[in-house]
Length: 96
Image 1 (tube, helix red, strand yellow):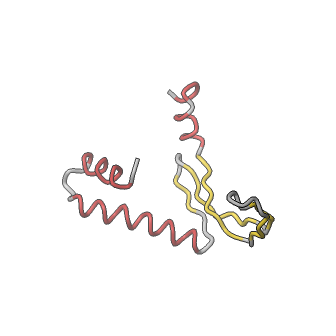
Image 2 (cartoon, one colour):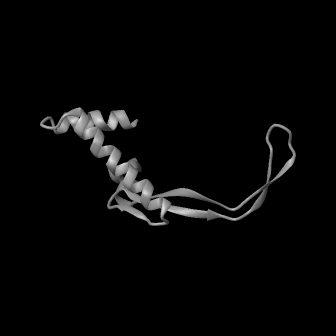
Image 3 (cartoon, rainbow, N blue to C red):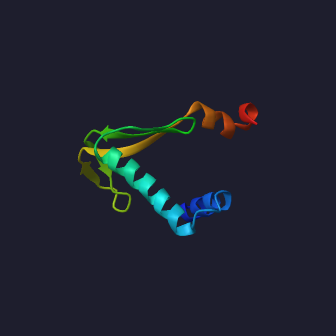
């Protein structure tokens, strides 16, 4: 699902709002989540999951093209952990 698909799906459900208004709301939500992660904060959506930032230690990597070792510096990466409710819905044996 793309962001456009999400906007269209919400617009189908809430027809009183224009596509432009819903797109604005979705963009504000994503911008707020991005800003929170930039500040090192955790974003939790109950039943869906948590978005956090994980710090990766410096390490030696390998250039896939040349095969040479490359020094990778410390960095921060976004991490998503699913919530129990989403995990159960996706796992067909337990959720549906």
